[in-house]
Image 1 (cartoon, rainbow, N blue to C red):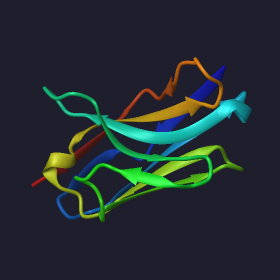
Image 2 (tube, one colour):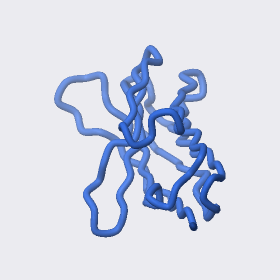
Image 3 (cartoon, rainbow, N blue to C red):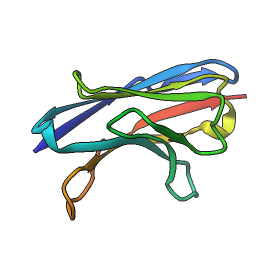
Length: 118
């Protein structure tokens, strides 16, 4: 009953920046941590960044210092500011929303393509 809409992906040159957003709607009172995962062709899906309800972030080592995750609880939206993009950042990025209630499945966005050319 929660809908996720991702936006902000695209094609950029190495060194440039993009900002992804993921807006949720519906029954949002049960939303917990929010984050971003990515999956490149031939690779496993990996966690990029996650942020708790109180705003505490965690990042994959590969993006620390370059990416910033943030959330606006009033807007029920999570963002990923991506700076100094590298070709190895090329992937489909998926928004992930966790539930505060025990035993419930996560919500997932449809994915947005980020392509970084060298």
